[in-house]
Length: 592
Image (cartoon, rainbow, N blue to C red):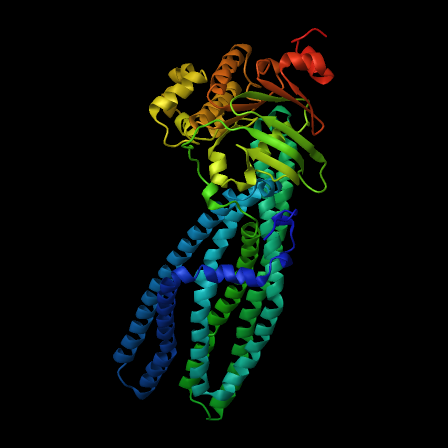
């Protein structure tokens, strides 16, 4: 299926068909059908044991009326109660365990899907809402398999069994009972769609609340530095209030369904009591039979209540399935692209852009307008130009995070669309502009792209990026925890960790996006030496606003407004290009 510009949380529920939702629900049952059959069978046995109790109670009353011994009938009644409870509890445990297994499988599948989504789709999604789908929405599925699905089977059998036994006792009273119960069935059918709609809105609002809170936490220091705590609290509180209101609406419709079921049974009780009492008074029915019938009437309370609850849970779960399916319906990258593997062939590769046109959306401005340039294999090439010129987008297209609307991008003389995605990315080393560092140890961050790296290779990468002094200062060396998003490291240290991580991949093409933006002059000079050294082994393509880091590049490509303006060495561009000369002058590299 194709992608959609709308966020999943903003789509109407009707855009995802019920058939697909049912397919997802039932698809989870197949691997667990043995557990489902066992749990449902045990529940049925417990149900049948329960159905025997009114008959056994009738025998106790009859024995009492005859003056016979009560020990046998009471023992049989007690045994039925105990055996039914134990078997039903066992069946419930089997179903609960199956439900937990299904939730686990669904979460694993959903996480796998999310991490394989294409970058443009993730750009449109909200992290907090995705977390809500993985945690809260998947949890709602458990109730479907433990209560709504298996519980419904037991309830149906209990209902039918009670109806049959009630029919044997008195057909007229049964008709009175079913007439009242039918009313609640019609009401339930009318209320069910409203429950589902209200549940979907409630879960969407909950996901939105998670997104708003996630936004505040991601910019936690910015919030505090700007004294915006009160404003963000108000925004999150507003989202929480909306989630509460939507939840109350869903609860209201659920209460209507549950109350209707209970009221119907009470009305049936009153009707049976009146008609049955008249039949006992006329001698058409025994008192013990009326008592047994009344007990079976109350036995209808449980299955009717269970059926109403199952219907409600099913509607809630279908809303959750709709939100899960909105993610699974998005296009994903092939599984082979997941995971990192260092290429066996580390031969430097070149890059060529040939008439590339690109924009991030139909309603977005053009980022690349027929961009063409070539990067030779080996050595260092730099991309420079003002902000918004389209430099970082070059890297996104090389990595195939995005697809150009026109033109071709070639790596190693081969269209990137013809590369197996995993093989392409294994050949690249990419250092992002914000140099993200993950929570965990320093070692885990270093080997994130090359988990098989040896201690010797790690030590060499640390030395090349001038991080060996940092490791010596850390209390546990490379095993030191660096905190959430590397908060215990300085900006320059995080940048060098990201570069060391890329070097450990031994890439055929190293992409550096503003790799020295957070470094002081001394470390920038050292890193320039590292980049120059690496450029002798592989191809380095670097984006830089600091021209001092690329004055020694073999070739500099100047971009402006989505086009290539000029190419050449530093000296050539100073002489021939006004924009480059102005950039160099503002950084005191040439006289103005």
